[in-house]
Every structure is written in C-alpha cells, then in structure tokens.
Image (tube, rainbow, N blue to C red; front, side):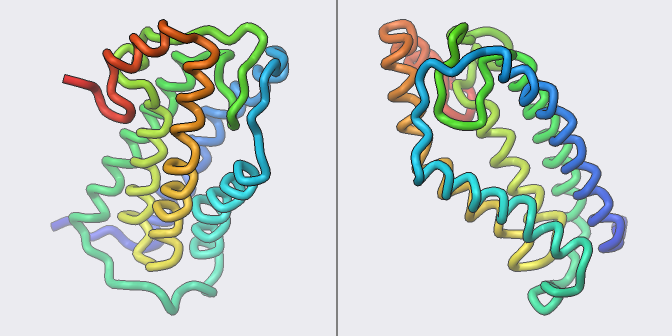
Length: 196
C-alpha cells in the first residue's frame, strides 16, 4: 500500500484550497457587474457563512501551519487518504464546472441579480445544486486528508449547518423568481445528484 506522509497531505490540501480560490475569484469579480435586485441575506446567513469559513478555512489552516490542534490527531490510514485525494480532485472539477455553467448568475448568498437567468444546461441539466455537491465532496475530502478530529471534520459540520438551513430558502427564492419554469426544472432534476 502507498504511504502518504502528513506533510504531503497538508500540501495537497493547501493546493486544493488555492485551486478553489482561483476558480471562484473571477466569478467574485464578475458579480459586481450584475446588480442585485433582490437580497435575502440575513443575520443567520452571515453567521452561517462565518461558521463555514471557520470550519473549511480557518481551523484546517491552523492545523496545517501550527501544532495547536495536534492533540486531536488520529493515525493516517493510507486508503482513506488516497480516497480523499480522488474526492478532492472530483470536488475541484465540479466546483469549476458549476461556476463555469452558472456564469454571471453566481452569488455567494441568497441574491437575485438584474440579469439573472435560469440555467438548465451543462451540469445544471441534471443537478440543481452541483456547487453544493462539490462543497459536500470538498468537506468529505477535508476529513479524509486531514487526520485530525477538529480540522478534518469541522468542514462537514459547518457546511451541513449552512446547507440544511439555506437550501430550502434558496429554492423558494428561485420559485418566486422563475415560477413554473423552476417548478418543472425541480421535477426533472435532483437536488445534489442526478435524478434517474
């Protein structure tokens, strides 16, 4: 069996984080060109986004760059680490593909933009929320790459809170904006995985 060192896993994790940032950055810049016409951002949304930042960025980076969380380490398991690398690569691809296909409609929060359109092509043809799918995979990969009970699992916990408290509100907002078109779209697609 291939043995991967903890240092290598940390390097892979940081490289993936840089990849996620590079994928999102141009979309973050482009969103400024498309004015917000409906904003559903609440205090709860801001708190959830902060929790996700802590769970998916701050705690893992504390673990990678300091010894402060080492007390919560557990032994490396090679096949889980290799699985984590594969899942991480898949999550990066889905993250890129969902941003690419969504284009200027992307928003980090619950917002409708001036030129907002219903995207039902590309990856969105089969899955309504592939970006959430990619982030679930990212969180799973984090748990498989970082053998630490705090840094490894903080992503899953924080993102689960955001996902389960946000997705119904997001779909309600889309129904209000696109009406029957979104209702038909919901019937033909899966929320996180393709509908068969």
